[in-house]
Length: 208
Image (cartoon, rainbow, N blue to C red; front, side, top):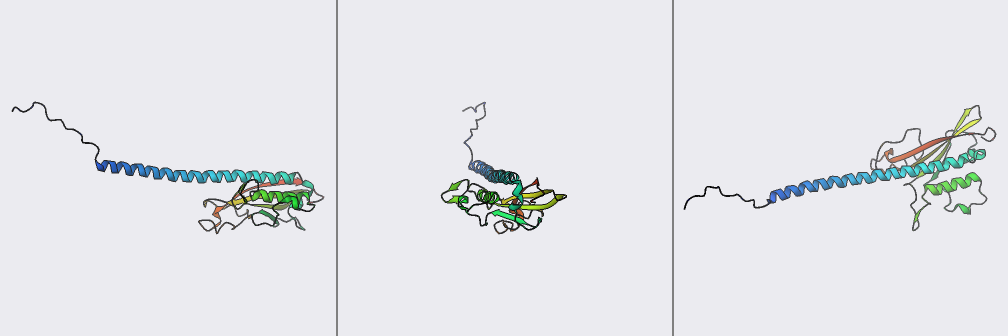
């Protein structure tokens, strides 16, 4: 029998088990990385949402105080206009859940009650739980004293809440909610406290 002038053809017998295993490992690593990225994106989205809500709450109180200039000092009760005097509302305060039950409240008392409930998430409920705001939200009102010959006064409004992950602690001047979130923060310190703040100014030399 004469040998063929053409070499025998080599046929592929399919993908080897090793190649399949390598492919599975590569796909699995890619999926794990994608899952980690998705988790980080969800945390970032949650932080962004909470910051947006905090800014809305901040603007709400600023609008209330600016609309009630003649009694603005009553939002932070104190015999003297001192920058060490702070009114804290929201989580842990003693405000009633239903502001309509207040007996003949002043404008500022009603504002404080309603803002407290907004900080606690009263705008949206799930069963009996208030879920319409930030995590462990607190709002602080702080008067800063004379600015111009006893005629112009300022009030600092701050909203703080519990962040999902440790980042950077707010500046030392922001004392609202200081160390209130340490126990629930993974790092055990103040780096889970988030804060937004604004300063409003009013002219009212007679009552302030």
